[in-house]
Image (cartoon, rainbow, N blue to C red; front, side):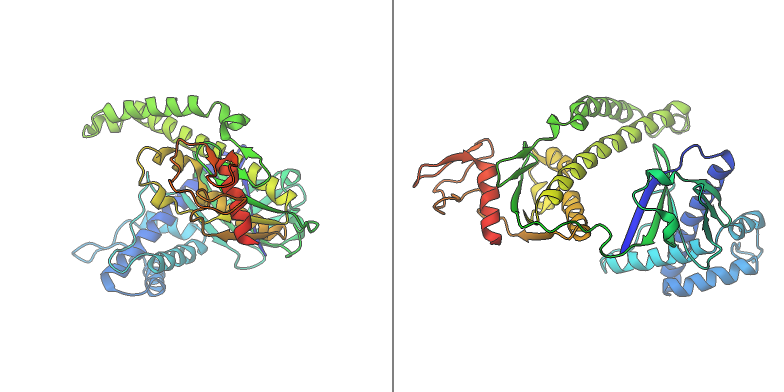
Length: 386
């Protein structure tokens, strides 16, 4: 079982930071070069990778119209970086061609917009070395200090298969891929079943009557203040003249951009923290979890609720539940949510008039039961799975 451990690189020195920046730039350049060559020559990414290495070996990676070659210093920098970067970037390009539609083509990576990261694969036993003090030595990169006590898995007992460095507004992060036993996270079997309904005001409502609201948790208390601050900074950026090159190159513009990106990441981290808390609660307590198969793309067509739905991160929570239920040995059932909120969970009669979004209470026309509409939907979801 593949398992990824992600942790922040604390107190990196200037030499390590410069090396990581250099490798990200070369990874982006390699990807763009391979993409341009494959589009021009109509060759596969593997063939263009071999061409790239052959030209780099002969110092002919860059050429002019007259046939003369230049920029030998940059070619020397590419040779100083790990060779696994070229392999990983070609694999990414192959995956991009597979996932993209036939009418479209993969996009080139931009320095300011694309994700700044690079990946290293294990070629031999000397690539990655981890000692008992937590010093991870990587060939042509340097030494990364890790706090082994804070990690959930003892890395000394496992071989590192892959390493990914990622840059964010908080700093540099390292993701380590290892191969764990299938039963490493398995817990005691539980026979309890639960149905969960997703909502806008209450994020999750289960068939037992419990509701999870983001605003009631610590991570959601200052969420609105941060969002208003983000909105204010974005309005300042929008009012500025983007056509003015001097303003874009100024330090004020860069600082403002960094603040906006920092707030974006802080808000997403708060949402993810809440999602992990809710998913952990259900995985620890229940053996079978039943959820509805929602399509956020269709839900986002409602412009009045588009921001609230996108902040809900329903698809992300679905993925978190899938891998956690797999790790802990739980059963996850995904059902079609059609008419779950319009049907009574007691007698099974469907309402003659559809409930509107502002109606919080479900009242049955036949048996006369009055219940919260989300809890009623959660009980119907559980019934459909049984």
